[in-house]
Image 1 (cartoon, helix red, strand yellow):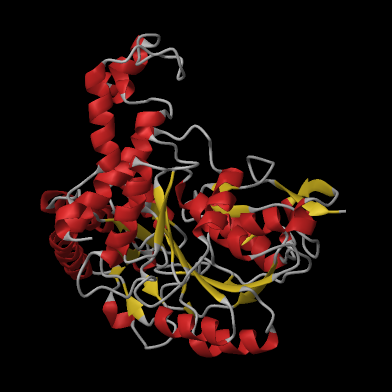
Image 2 (image 1 turned 90 degrees about the horizontal axis):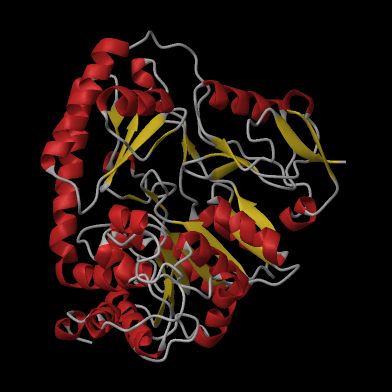
Length: 482
């Protein structure tokens, strides 16, 4: 398809045509274009609520698309350089899980780094696949997990030749990129599928001089968060397939878990955003890179902070760096990332993406303005001046490699007992516990609890991290296997 066809937005056009017809609704949703819920109309507006409609012949059906949604998916596939694209309304969580469920059955092995998003390990709970973890390197200075190296991955592939797939997250939340091209070649050499969680990589398909994207290097499947850097509505995502993957089977897998009542607000936002990126993405992301590089330079001028970038690249565990990410190490001013995160929100009315033990991430995208960047930089300068502490020993790192004792599925469905966190050392964890965001589990079902992990959890909690995944919402107790 050429640029002219990328100017089309079939779902958006169908919704506009539908709105003009003033059809009388005797179907769901029950608010009937907002008439039954005036407060909702007041909050969202008449046009928005009026387009919150049910699947019908003129608007196609996401579970079995044959017209406008199918055309929108074909346009998306062309824009992303894939054989097929699926519009997803369950977020990239649904897309990641569909990748794993499409390639792994109970008892199959899948190779992946342990610092994956919880959605990947949740998929193992669902399908019964066995994780084989590659331990990523860590950057001791800034305390984050890095990418996986081809050398380490190949060792694991040789030891587990029957594994069905390799899954990596690229780029990571912090902007770290692995050598996805070489990893893809290795996966195919050993007869495995290459799956890429590109939740933070939509822009890699449209920007220039950015790290390689999954489809361009021949990966089999990729999960792309359009709502993060691509401009679509929250919870909307795209799943891409390549290399002759059976798209009809993948659709069946998607339909196992995805809603049959897909929101046309989400679907149309994907359609419009794809058009926007296909026509103006290169220009838009050039501005994003410019703003991020400017912010990096200004923050490093303040002193104490370290806004890192391509200088980290080492050809291996940091093969490349996504310069649109504004990740900043904060412990140089004696504050954890979560403490700076809280100060920015509570004292300066600036909401950044997340803060962890050592870092903050300010997400810069096509909707940002240079004056907003200036405000963030000035606030960080102010925080250093007003709140800087003498550096004290801090727990470093967002990640400790746990020991896997049994599969996530077996552990999740085993008999468990809720006991105080302090008493769990040496026991097998039966649930998830993670700081969210970024949603990388500190512990997953089936992993051994250690005293080091307990201390890390207590420290994260003390510093204000949002601990999630546990049955005990306060995370004072943990479910362990009996």
